[in-house]
Image (cartoon, rainbow, N blue to C red; front, side):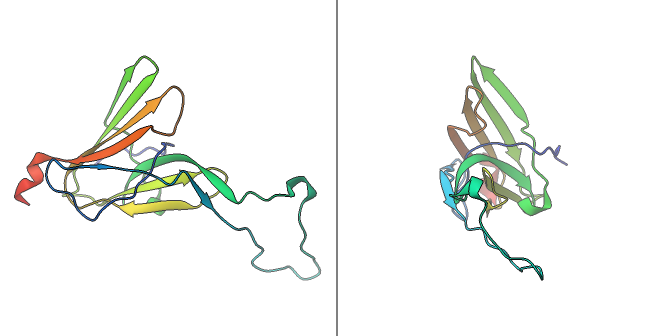
Length: 153
């Protein structure tokens, strides 16, 4: 079983349903999402209003990270990278995903919201790489490549 760790990453997934052996998918999270905040129910005896400190409520949420998960992201099983390589200020993380035994997901995380954009990855073994520059938790490049052993599937 993979080591589990909750980690913020940084770029997210728009994926296709399957990839052929040795094919590469570049993952791209939308750079921001829009949300709305509203009161579900008004408690008896209260009135709703807007805090004057926040005259413009946060509606646009910037991409803050991304990650791979063993199972649906709402279960919270974020995967730690299998390998981390550092070159100067640049960092590359590698995940080896053996989907023959687990279903893997990818999620885009956004600042100041609990909303995630999620996608199940194709059901075949692959390895995924995230490349970071400096101290940023948002990858500058994120891609997955099908492992050659998947050719017989």
